Image (cartoon, rainbow, N blue to C red; front, top):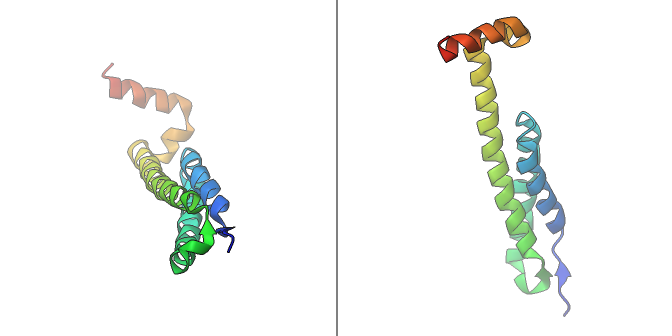
Length: 110
């Protein structure tokens, strides 16, 4: 019997890569892509474990799932960092360039 490609293997890999890239865009796209990669990777892993001799390309699923987990963690850290910046400086300060420069000079000790 000829092996067939595991369904969604390449999609899981692409979503995992996009989750790592997406964490740099304020975290939200990375979080979405990472969760999708983890869910699809879990389904593909379950399918592969039922009949490993029937499918090939499981390496893409494993790599995509791992990158999805890394992307979710990085995205959560990025969202936490942004929330910390907003709470530290305040929303008004972030919107006013002159006020932001004053706060930065205070931080530098000048």
